Image (tube, rainbow, N blue to C red; front, side, top):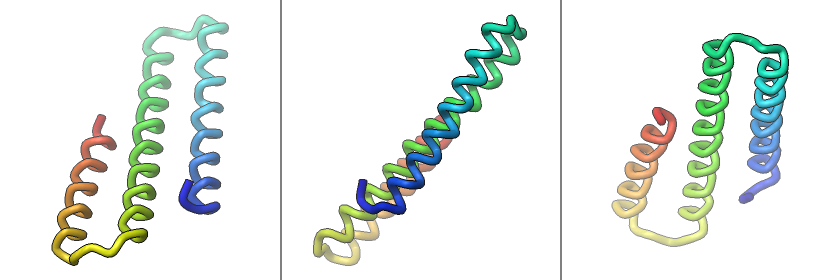
Length: 91
């Protein structure tokens, strides 16, 4: 992780995801309807995708801050990153 703030943010998000998974386990144990379980699984997948995007964004920013590159190259990388983030968040 690039920074303590990023690490804390990632761990908080992982904790939330773990809580959702525990809730889904309980739903299965309690024989909840499949559609309810699937809805919760969808929420977990969305949370994992958002976490992936969050880490990718932080990683890209840290990498760009560590190197000296021309402004137009930096802009192209930032544009590419935004496109990738949009795709990851939609998945």
